[in-house]
Image (spheres, rainbow, N blue to C red):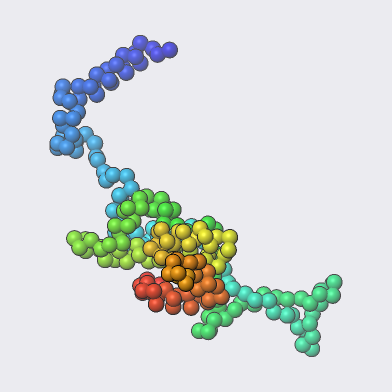
Length: 231
């Protein structure tokens, strides 16, 4: 049960909100300078404005929070001083993991994902909505930082796209990945025309099966995709 004081306070609050300020209706003062002295009104939710450097750091923080790097290794037989295989207690040959060296003489590393990266999750991390992220990809001519901001947004999107491309060979995720690429990254699925001139079976599996990553990227370049975002 409400006490008399609390009930009176609630009634007083309702009366104040009904009357507005100094007896004026709230709708009559919205948009006037009086509002600025009463409360600070910020940007609409999800439309936060970033500087390019801050935006880039935010994107890097998102990707770092859901991934880790590990060296790429291969098994190598352990040999004794006479170059004979070393056996374990059960008579099995013992192996050790050695780092793989790339063509440029460096140890190979790979990125492992704790969870799949996505534009939606990136926007949540940054506190913006998808439409704001989309606008960031187009340079604002009135913003001196606009070109750098657009570049950072496009590179972040390209990183998500690169992850999805790597998933195309996973039969369990291929259909969902293709749907994502088609609807969120502008990919188009080619169709093979049959002898009657109609659209036949999809050729995307045939085009990608057995292709190396370099060959896939070459296919993208030939299809007109801007490969400068991958450099």
